[in-house]
Image (cartoon, rainbow, N blue to C red; front, side):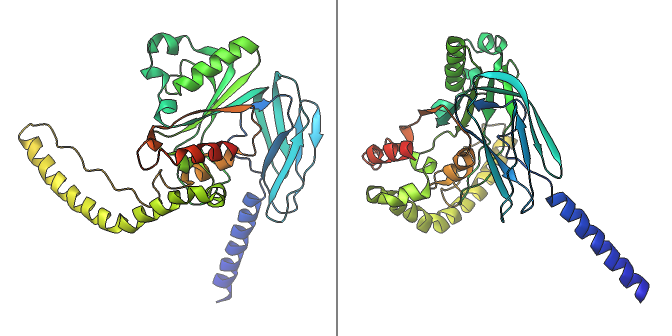
Length: 321
């Protein structure tokens, strides 16, 4: 019995060692990656995770600092303000070494809102001409993946790309045209981060703490509470409607007729209208990143009779947030 036990123990030790080595790697959020733009003339935070107590060395454009990860494994450091320029390499070294290439220094803008901001270049006027003429190597874009979260997240999905005929067709038209004109006018590297979702209300883009702290915004939670209370019954209706639709769709196919409209799923948990749901997933992970400003294109989803009046308090609260 000793041999199998020793083999089991040895295997477990090897797995634990491998896991320990993996967790020792310094890790960065997605927004800190190749081809990014760092905000000029500002104190710029660089942050990530490592083993608790691990020393990390950050080197960029002649600056070097050595932060240490806290008990939770989080570390951060700040680069001193720098003029526009680049490209440079950003090196982060701990037990592993990360080199981020082609990093520029310029102005960083957030482009957020609903379908008005999501509307892509490929659906705009003169789409083919605009897309094929996109060739601005020092204008960078970052498109945040659509996600909802119940609590603020540390990271999100996306990648930095130069503004080219490959990256621009599916990017926000408002964001691209805004960034392109600024880039031409001021002549420095520029970045646009698209974090937008069609058909979304401002409450989804505002933090839970801000919504809770303002008594005038209580209807946001009252209304959402009513939606959640009705959700089980609405979900049951939706499932029945799906069964009917599948039967009708099958008959339509046999008869070579147009398919009936598919039933819409009800609003409920995890929906992109949930209070703070988009802030948690698509804004909170960006808040450590130094920016120059933000552009916002939204309002229609709050224009109904039941919500329009509330928007006069909700919108400024979201801006302050």
